[in-house]
Image 1 (cartoon, one colour):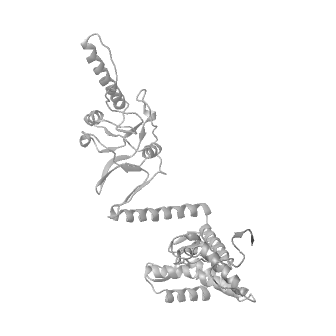
Image 2 (image 1 turned 90 degrees about the horizontal axis):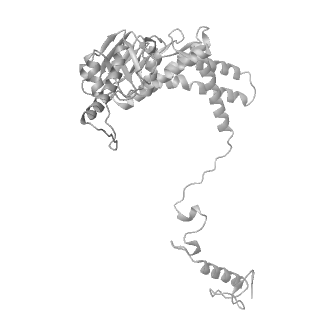
Image 3 (image 1 turned 180 degrees about the vertical axis):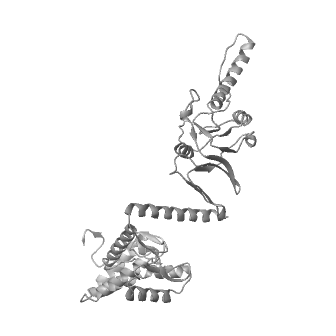
Length: 384
């Protein structure tokens, strides 16, 4: 359900990673935790198959096995002693480390995506470590609260109230992938519009208010132009009314009545320049006062781009289209079967004979289907 979407204000959230046995026993909620970020593999790995170890005493083999376990335990002890409550690693955290941290009240997650790990580091103020040696408080991050929250069939690790307040995360929910993708595009467009508004430092009223006001101005200006230019400006003014008309059609309102009200408001009333389509109630309203704003740079760019597109279309005086023919030989410009090819038609020799017959007939000769008298073969441009 889309109503399950939520905003992690001043924090980071990412989907739960792969977990080993003992994960369910770990603490899933902390207040003001310390976060340790690693690029270290906390997993006991067996030696390669072709490894060779020479020993003189069977007890030495056990010492080698104990050394392997001691290495992983030293890494785990270092993570606990540094005072971290949450351990995140880009590389795997095995079942031994998971159970070790669970017994000591820590939370861990391995195979965290590189992008998620960087976002957590930026939000919490931590530093990603490539070794567990010499860990201290300066490399640890912190946040106001941590919780593993279940959303639908998925689990998310949520870091809230991070020191970097500019970081926020939106978790979207929906009934299908297409709905989620459309919601993501809508939110992205809204964020980009706000970003552009902050950059341009100027906004205008939306809802078709600007288009109606510009259309009114162009209609009045067209009356001062003589000749065909008046028609062009009037057509441009009429084209601008498509924006509020389309808004009405999309909302299911009568576009004719609303456009008539907008024309009257913008023409006869001094305070009507910010009036546009009221999508909520089905009429017209002061969209600037209602908070429906658009960056002025966006409007200027859209007008410039549409005008240039119209000029390009008008500059095309003729369009030549070669229709697809049912004749297979139409693409090459030759009749079917030309050159002795299969598909019907006369071979080249028969065509030459017919041509000679035509020449003989014009000179009073017979149309025998053969070459003319005195011509035994063709050579160059004349007979020999």
